[in-house]
Amino acid sequence: MTAKARGIGALLRRARPVALPEAAADRAAFAARNADPANVHTLLVVKPHDQLGDLLVAAPAIAALRARYPGARVVLVTRVYLEPLARRLPGVDAVWSVPRAGDGVQVVRFVRDVRRLRPDLAFVLNSVSRSGTADAIAAWSAPRLVIGRSVVGAGPGVPGALAHAGGAGGRGAPDPVYDLDVPVARESTHQVDRVLDLVRWTGATDPGPARLTLSEAERVAGRAAWCEAPAPRVGFHPAAANALKCWPVESFIELAARLAAGVGATPVVFDTPKESGPARALQDGLARRGVRAAWWPAGPLDALVGPCVALDLMVCNDSGILHVAAALGVPTVSFHSLGRPEEWAPRGAHAVALHAERIEEIGVDAAEAAARRLLGALAR
Image 1 (cartoon, rainbow, N blue to C red):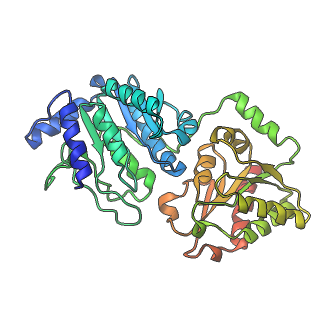
Image 2: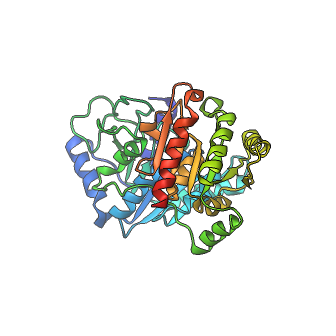
Image 3: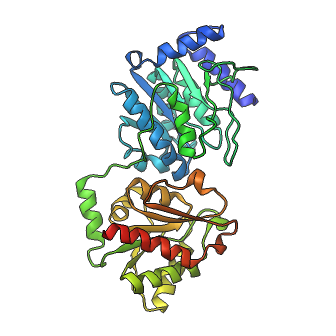
């Protein structure tokens, strides 16, 4: 238990509109009563991590809350960078962005709005890390109940936190912030399931894969972006934040060239503002081999969704665009090394995740076979 968590817990006790019962049985009854849909009018969901994947693995849990509380207002707090995608999550009524520290006016306004919210339930959707910022936002909103997870992490065998307010047989001191400290279920391997565990105790159920909403105008504009690119159109995003998660550019070039020659695919190279080098190298390598590729420049997230949804397949590393493509319903072939596919990769018949301890050991033959299978299924 950190000093920061204890300090935020003290803030929560001062901000809370009602005191929680002391006895464990009474606290469990209090949690159940306050989670009854008849008693829930406002939900606060806090997910302020910057990574695209973190937001989108939490999307099914947000959709599950929407279905469980159809009459409640759902307010999602995230980062400025993720706001364009957060606004596309179905069932979210308002998206608030955590302001940058240097923007004093916005910080004051944000703090005021959070304090006025007074939600019935505040969910801190921890996955692999705990955020002091998220804890503070949840506490300052003065909810009746704060739900989160103190024991977090990735990989197999994540140990469960002790569920104090609503669970049975909790031992030890309760978490200072979370009234309900929800463990990872024994069978929850995928991060989507681990985040869903945070809301299942309310009676919420798995709504299926995450989906992003687009207007028809955006879909038309996306198709128009590739009007001169013959189908099938295969997106290639060769970058990732960590170099150890990057399949070699030479392998991307070989795969794209094979698909162009073998199935008549048009490669579409997606650039990124943070790691532009691999995309340029892929484009140049294809040009040297006489393969004409389309190009999508780096830009804001909102500008990405239309062109992405018009693809027939996305081929990429274990990166944010993988989750964006999957949430748009685009089939994916992805390359993994550091993260386990059974924990992080999109699930379903239209997603193939290839894994090796050293990512360069993933062969082009395996990638080509996966891509051809998915494109063949599309053609049928």
